[in-house]
Image (cartoon, helix red, strand yellow):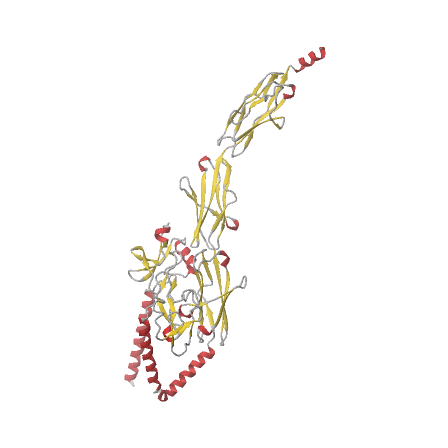
Length: 543
């Protein structure tokens, strides 16, 4: 009895040590899991402050994922990598081919990805065999096994093969009449015919011989095992009951990894739904509906029995809510996924702003983006980068409290996130309104004589328009009896105004008005008096 108790204590002590050692090991080390796309922005902002500066990549030396931050990463050397490649750590960041079971059809970006984006499809459904195993940029290609009488239920885009992630690859048993066989291109030909030797030239028919011999061996094994069925009837019946219970009571389910997918226009995007059912996916009714307009799309069967729909060249109009509806004799289920196709855009009300020195001036840019963006305001003349603040309704603002002449320049607002980049430009002109000076505030002229109203200008930027006013009316040309203009000069090139052949009607107030791109300024009035008018009236009366 004592020996049994000691043995029990030993067993419990051994299990305690095992559990303690496991917990200790678990608490001291763990593998980092890179965030999913839906978690990426939050994780990157929390760890590094900016999405573009956060990296979660495979360390190829120790084969674990590591997180890191890099200030001001280079877009081409650090973030963007060519199709068919992913970024890994080998001391520095280097490119590496996608693994044999994944592919990357578009440029790999580290601001949202840690591995090649898509998993290759498996040609494991009934009647399917592999045509090619794809590449680092393309999915696996499958075909129906014509040697076993299988043909495509729906003709694929390429007659010899189909791509499971892009189209329906379902097969069915096609029968040919006696003396005929199914050819490589799925037509019935004579058993002695050699017409299909050139069809599907890139397909290796030797794989069918190996597959056939394996299938034959499997059939023989199955027949041999059936001889022992009477001896194992109880276990067979018990297993059958369990399978029936699972078949009857397991609920049909369709699930998704993330609720929202964001992609830029033109970037190939796949909607993926995971199906859980005891009924084969081929025998399950499935459809994808866009809720905004009721459009129904055809789902294809992807790797692992998932349901997929791929947008080869998505546009903004593809943005919407998509509902996957599946049903079979077990039940019905739905899953909803939101797709957003956009890239950030930035615009301005005016591309040119004119401001006086020391007058507060705002540069305003209007941002439209669902996802957070990186934003930079750069002065093109010297490359200075300025920090913008966020205003109301997505407005980005930079304020010059007291602008000076050196602030004149071209300012470019650049916004970017993992969906794309956009920019808008504003040209700012800072200066003063022109200063207008007169020499005399009052002048006296004789009837029939000439007079010059002197006006001087001081302006930066330069004056673009100048006018003279007489008694609050713009002076236009007035000709004398010989047809000559009595008003000369009074232009930007020669601001002073000369009046010839003075008459009694020229008496009054004259002002000079100058304008540049900043504003307008008017001189003090010059009061012109006319002499000789009283003498002229007396002479007329005497006559």
